[in-house]
Length: 512
Image (cartoon, rainbow, N blue to C red; front, side):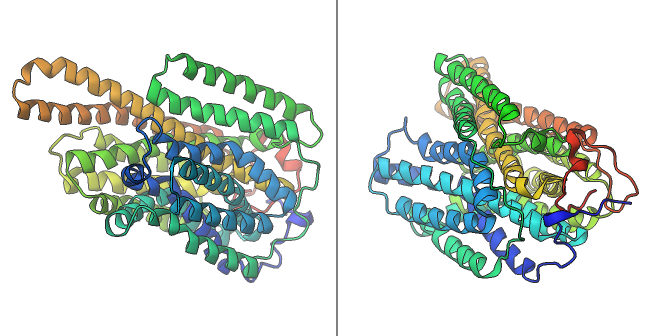
């Protein structure tokens, strides 16, 4: 028989009557945070010109957000466990709205960069609180599958929605509206959460805050994310890039050593060492590396090579969004209560890899309907199917008091994966482009031929990087098949999970 969760975490006997209303506001907040990672990309050229930001500093509009978000997520998750998830969620939303207003009203470079860092910091508060609220509010297996299906679709497709919204707002209004649009999102979600969400009692972790853990994890993650950013701009062999990676390795190793010794760790190692949770974090982080790199390449391909407008580029991503929503809510959510999670995650990543494989055949004159559209549909279906059980497994068998930090780990894997994907795949593409142009330069004797060669070199670079993305997705599938060993809900037995999770007071999850 599957275990019956006991203790304060077990609220499943009396489901929260407002849980579905709460999901609306949690999903709205998640959409805002995820789309904000990409919505500014399309608006950046206009903002750079208006505010007089130099070419050397323009990347900081993106990087400041990623550094603050990625670096503070574990701290944000711990604050949610300590302070209460509902309170942390509402404060994070209101702070995010204020930071967005500051960005939209920016009069110079410093004000813009400061607002982006503040957005990232408040995002690090509300994102883990949102996911952990889902984990403790939805206790019935089938309902939880539906809730995580919706959440997974938003988490996966929000970046593409950001490209569409960024294009529309920039082209028809002004780049400042890519910031101002967050304010109604945040205010509605905060007001709804305040009046609707009732957090289950007894799930807080009131242990003293692990200050050394906060400092080491924040500095280690910031060094890691910044190292990949510097690698993209200055090269992998640059002394500062190497120094940042070395510093990150030392800081994160020290963090693990501290967490193993302190009485009340920021990140209890049991959260990571349980094989199902650890496998979910790793597989998801790798898949995001492939995904974020593709967003970048397809955006440039459609705008620079195909000549699409920002709005048309955004709408060109709709098949991927449709695929993700279908994969999460129609495939993943319907099957999650019937099959083991690895049988959704593994095949999902393989389907996504097939879509990515189609894109390795990209050429200057490739057809959107003949190549890009079917590739996006496969990518979306595969990622949507895999994301949903991965999100749910991020809190698999975790104690209620650790739900916030466990949720922060899946967000951290996404943020770090996004930073690595953008830098790693962009560097591979740039090297392949340079080599292709150098090999074919002698034959390009006319201006038209040289212009065509530039485009061919660019597409060749994208193709080379996409091959790497295919390989990364295959590794994600392998991890899902080998690490994830929990059975389907209601199964008579479950493989023993490492890390002693079976002996803990459990948050009810779909797969026991």
